[in-house]
Image (cartoon, rainbow, N blue to C red; front, side, top):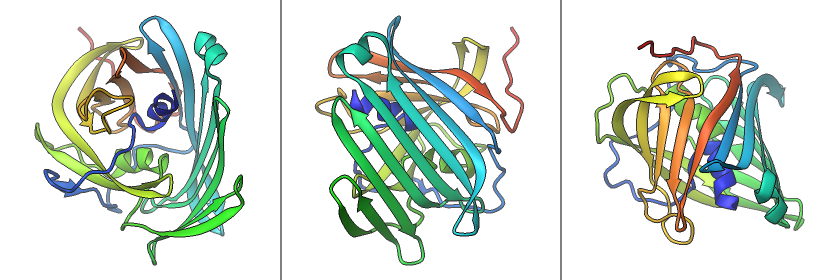
Length: 269
């Protein structure tokens, strides 16, 4: 269930990979078109068939930190129904990232997953490529070297939407993104599978279909167990995710949204 809640926020489970087979590492570009705006809000529903397991929300607003104008993204996830009865999960995430380059300055993670708790604060120094981690629960402070343009779990969601140019991508193309999570550096890999029109509660939507590579083993059947559909428009909204687990499969759907920067287009038959 812990992995599934993380899927709700970034639609992936992190894993370490080599750069083999990656066409490019995503980097910030100030000329990129902004994919989101102040006040944008999403709600996602994670479910096993007709049974709801979890809900998560993501919202972003303009803010300042250390007198630097930033976007402040807040993620909240919780189990519901029978899942909440058997395995209570309540996760809070906060990410403060720069407006110009989408680089995280501060990441907060306060979670309770079936009694497993964490309360962690991470400050990023992108000039020195260092992450300063404050584990408030264990009262331990530590430093870690990071990669260039490193992202946290939440900022990565907005960074990819804003700086991954999908206008000229070809089927089979793979891109990478440097990430730091749970005191480790990861290279996240995303492969483009093609364009597809899918049915949603809002109507039929043109989407870009991707394959995020994940760690196989205890949760996922294989590295290619997760499929992600993103709206094929300037918003680049996560519309749907499907993950084949060791036991069964789970899906995550966009349930509600508001304050999009660009029009959300529905395919008319």
